[in-house]
Amino acid sequence: MEKEKQYSAPANGHSAPDGPGDVHVLDILNIFAKRKKFIVITVAICTAAVIVISYVMPHIYTTSLSILPPEKNEMNPLTSMLGGSNALSSFSLSSIGENHSSDFYLDVLKSRTLAESLFIDDPAIKNYFAANNPSLEGQILAFKGCLTIESEHDGLVKVEVDLPTHMLPSEQEQQYIAKLSAEIANGCSKELDRLSRLKVVSQAHNSRVFVESQLQATSAQMDSLSEAMIAFQKEYKVLALDKQVENEIKTAIDLKSQITELQLELDNVLHNQSPTSMEAQQLQARLAELRQEYDKLQYGGDSTDYYIPFPKIPTLQKTYTNMVLDLKVLEQVHAYLQNQYYQDRVQEERDVPVVQVLDTAPVPDHRSSPKRSVMLILGVIISTMLACGYVLVAEYFHSLPDSSAEHQRMKRFVNTIAPRSRYAKRLATENGNGKHHADIPERPQEPAPR
Image (cartoon, rainbow, N blue to C red; front, top):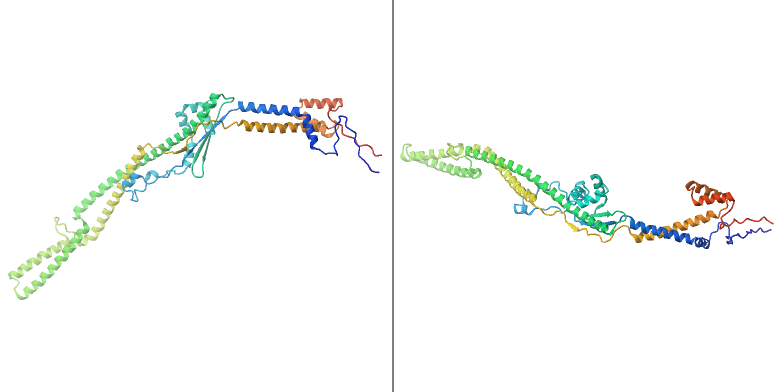
């Protein structure tokens, strides 16, 4: 015999489902239609709350500026005029340790020194952060919290300022905060330029002091070496050693040739005449004079003669060459130090902007937060979803009989999280009276088989 499941019609007139566990879209829409008033009121209340919150919450004004990366130092024009082609002249002591990257700008912008300097230069900025932070540390932390500092891949430094107002701000306060945000951003660039120039001037000052001391020491060494060379030249009768040696060699060759010729002539005269003859005596006297001159060249003469003895020439030439070389080196170093000294003086005295701002920070015309349109759309969507979800869950548990396990679990759950709620009291009342909610259909009972 074929068994058929028969269900009694529900007392409230609801249509029975096609089978256990079947849910249709029309059933869900029917539930929403019954609770449309609750859903509309809930969405309206949440939307109104979102609008009120958007007006009450602090408004944030955002502005930003862009700073070009530092340029690498090239050869100073003064160096070129003073002999920049020289290897020493192309090297600058003041450039030692100088940072040519954007990291220096990032470190300065994030430093405590910049914040304190900005507070001193612009009391309005300090007063803004001092309103909620009485201590200087709290003010600096709040100031840094409003800054967003980034370095782009091309070295461009971007500074962004997000400045909030108080809750429920007035129109005047909004205009003031918008203007103050631009002042903070532009003030950061000015302080960055001042601190960068201070760093450059400090480097130039330290370099100038060092170069000045080295210049004095080099001048003293040059004077001492010049005096030693003068004493050496007086002692060994050295004026221009190379030319002197060259002239002495030529003179010695000439004297030796004359001595040889006179000796041959004298031998010829003595072969034909007596040694006591007038001609022979004259040749002998002339030959003795030439030999005396030759000995002066070879062994040195008296103190009045500027002849350098040939045996001493190698030693004297080595000593004199070393002294000349040392003097030329000192002259080159002295010339370089003089160039560097004047460069550092110019760098120390100049007052030229170092930081180049690409885009200054404008006063923002509109707030960046809160965005009321976005908040309104999200509020409507979220409140609608929550209201519909609540209706579905409530309808599901209302449809459960009192004796079911799900109903008992729901009762315990509600009593745990909200024991004094309206729904908990209603569950307790329904359980005490043994009644169901008027809208809750009874679960159809399966008839006994025939």
